[in-house]
Length: 123
Image (cartoon, rainbow, N blue to C red; front, side):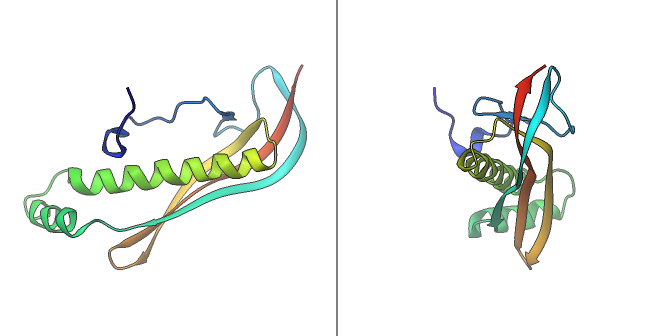
C-alpha cells in the first residue's frame, strides 16, 4: 500500500536507497572518497484551510496537527531531494546528515536537509 503525503508522519525515513546517518562514519565500512555536500531545500507554507484551522487551534494551545503535517511533508521532500543529489554523485552513503529550518517570510518556512555524500568500502 502506498502512503499519501499526509501519512508520512512516522518520525523516521526508511533507509532504502543509500545509507544515511547523522554520525560521521558507517559501522563496518571505511570512507573511501568524500564526494561533497549534498542538500535538499523546500519552502513550504500552509494552505488557506490549514492556516485558518491552525490559527483557530492556536488559540487553545497544544499541538496543531495541520501545521505539523506541513512541516513533516517539507522535511520528507527535502530529505528525498538530498538523496537524489547524492545519487547523482553515485554516493553509497550520506554522513553527518542534518535538518535546518528558517522562516523564509511570514507564513513560509525553508527546510534544508544536508550532509556529506561519500563512497564507502567494507573493512
